[in-house]
Amino acid sequence: MGRENEDLLHEFMAAFAAGDDGTLRRLVHADIVDHTPPPGAAPGIDGLLYAVAGYRQGFPDLRISLEKVVADGQDVVGYGRIKGTHSGSFFGQEPTGRAVDFGYIDIYRVRDGKLADAWHLEDIAGLTRQIAATGLERSA
Image (cartoon, rainbow, N blue to C red; front, side):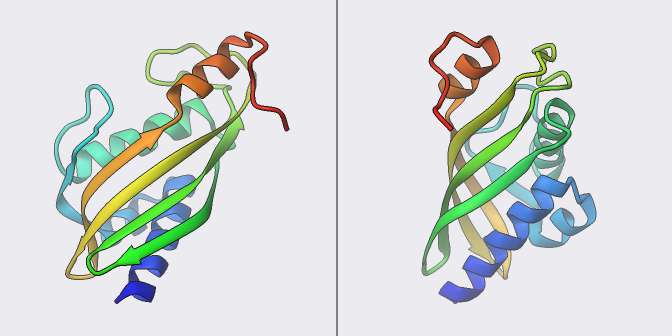
């Protein structure tokens, strides 16, 4: 089960980065519970697709790496980095044209081979600093 859940998370993150709604619908329960949704997100799969669309709109060249995955029973946890160029509106933040690189941690509960619950934490402070170009950006 551990390896299957790791593979599920890898496939999910690739579909998220690509904005592949069909694959996301196949990998995620329609009634997924996002315990940390973005503002304005509806419940279930529609809220997840809203978040994906928001990231893809804000960062059309979105790239997501998955650097560490830990699976235990029905839970799978991933750490990685989100990179892209802020060239579109991102949840109301007008584009700046700046490159961003920030970390995230996601925790998912898997039920029947699909993602059923989600908890996630993005380094929004780091993202905000990079968009604002305060000089505190992550060193490349």
